[in-house]
Image (tube, rainbow, N blue to C red; front, top):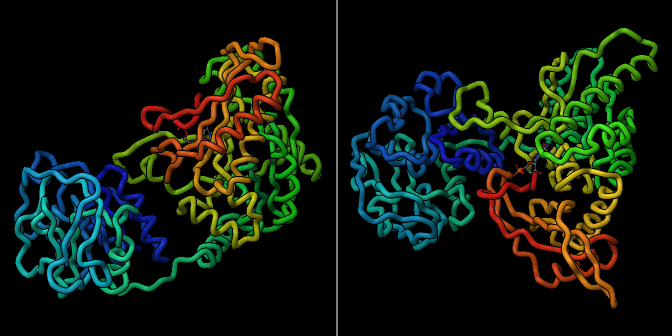
Length: 517
Ligand code: XMP
């Protein structure tokens, strides 16, 4: 693999994604790895990421100079670039001129090396206070900027390179070109990471893990569980049974779509548990968000276990248990929860199907090494329809956490209608790919006065929460066209009885989260 050494600040995942977009497999490792540990992973190349530290501050993570003697191509980015310069005897110091955001860089001489085929003057995205003032011996200075005397360098002979800016960020004009120059001209790697190669490899791994045992998969209606299930189906066919717990907190037509489209595309066995009443009863009178989540999680497990018993009874295997459970865990979840490798950035992740890992099953996680875009690509390769692979993320607890206040059947119906209108209009405007997701939220505890015809109304507001994001960790509110917003607002207030106001959420994340609960 290409190893991306993570110096913090969320850049590492983006770098790994860009490398994979260039069809080269990459993995993230924490900066606490020693040179020995890095080399033990047999890297084809190494990329040192950016990070929040200053090379000279106390406790700053550094790079062992021995790494650069191992004959492995290395690219340093931002902090990684400075750490590399410092380790090899260059000078790094404050310039007194911080560069943050879009920054002009001038190429010195011909554009060459990792800057080949990029502009003589280019816009890059920077974020630094320190800068490299003098390149280490044997290095060629390739570019400069106002705040970074040495903005890029190369030692072709040793295959060592560095840039002060962030080529992984889309705002860097030639970012992807710089990365690809490193991967293909510098490190001379091959393009062999594709949806087909991922699929073949996973099918093989799944077969090895499962053998001829039976396996269960909970479908949530989302992309991840659908693709994970389809992969396992491809690998072991009828040994797989999918379970779809309809908790009644789904959006309009969603349950039907899972039953129809998923089965049509995969031929998988599907067991549908219609548990709407169970969930509504358990949630009656509850408005605290965390309590709702807990109840939904708990009932989900119960419903799932009952489904398993019913499946076994149907197969005349009462009393036996299914050994394997498929989970749609993705690579960012693995990295963020430490990945078993002690990464700094630890966050407990939401469980997509609502199933905790301490259920007695052995887990099958065919998406563990994949980013979301790759999951979609593999799904398409498996023949899943666009309605499934192109789907916006939808939380496991569903509309249950999009009704602020108590959940009732009536309120769910009202929210489903408003949500269906908002989604249909977004699609009609051709903007599905411009938003990451657009939660539609019902403020069930809020009422406001309105007027309709000659009469006063006293109804609930609906909140539109369109956001753009790369990974849901951070997000910005989407600047949807006013005409579209007007149309959605008009239709919802006209067509959904009980709603007399539509408001737009213009909060980024942080400080807001994407969902309201
Ligand atoms: P927040 O609201 O934390 O959401 O900014 C980040 C992303 O996660 C989704 N989300 C969930 N997904 N189970 C899930 O499977 C959950 O409990 C859950 N809560 C939030 C949310 O829709 C967004 O994409």
